[in-house]
Image 1 (cartoon, rainbow, N blue to C red):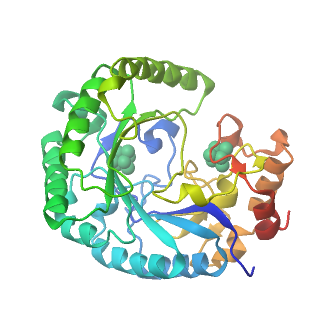
Image 2 (image 1 turned 30 degrees about the vertical axis):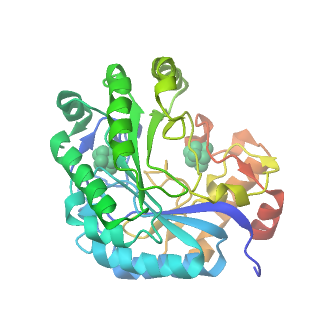
Length: 358
Ligand code: SF4
Ligand code: SF4
């Protein structure tokens, strides 16, 4: 591949499969599956796996690329988190890539300086909170402490403002669930006020994302649709009091990046799902898969410490999934995809042709 095609792609790199919380909406709990099989020790990604991942991404990937340093665990728990951020930042500076981080923010206080120093390559971080009342928080985010999280985020915002830094922007996330549905508006009002107070200007802003919960069956999908619709109605009644660009209501996965959307062409091919084309996922042991929902690694063609990243990404098994998606050959969809609405469904035909020879 000579010139890199311009399309939004993302790679998830799991720093650890360990988490300090046990959230009710965690994909590991929802799917009832995980690559964290009982009896397996917790894993932290090592430098060799990181090197092999970045080498693989360097050689053939398209741009811009979001490097998401998280998957099925809490990234800030990695004992060498600072070193990983530094090597990822080097990769991003050379490769027109961005870092992205999702964290439960319980240990944010350990790394506030480092994260603020990384704003050039880390335009956005997401803090998953999902509650405004301690009792609700403990029910949903079991093992955490809302006061600690709020203090950590408050300190981050204060430091960023004092240093006059525009980046990283933050997303405060609320996934609408049965247990928190009654406090969605209160959550939005609180964080709207806080983020407005600590706004540091620039072309993008800190935002609150109210998101629909992931669902893995049609029944659950309907249930989450209803919950989300009710919250949406409630927020809409107060919408005149909010700047709508600060409060985003998100029903599906979205891949927008600060100041980058405008450079995209209009996609010309609607697929069931774009993940197997655009989203390699590497777990903390080096296993590669093609979808962030594949936490049981059913779709994995192998491990990047045993095989070249490129060989695995273009392996027969992944090419067969791509073919099935292009041909809408539902009988040959992997089982996990059959009831899944998919995501990132739009792709350029030219991208598929250039990268996948299809
Ligand atoms: S913080 Fe994230 S990884 Fe940890 S249990 Fe909650 S949802 Fe799962
Ligand atoms: S259809 Fe769903 S499970 Fe299948 S690759 Fe896409 S997002 Fe993953």
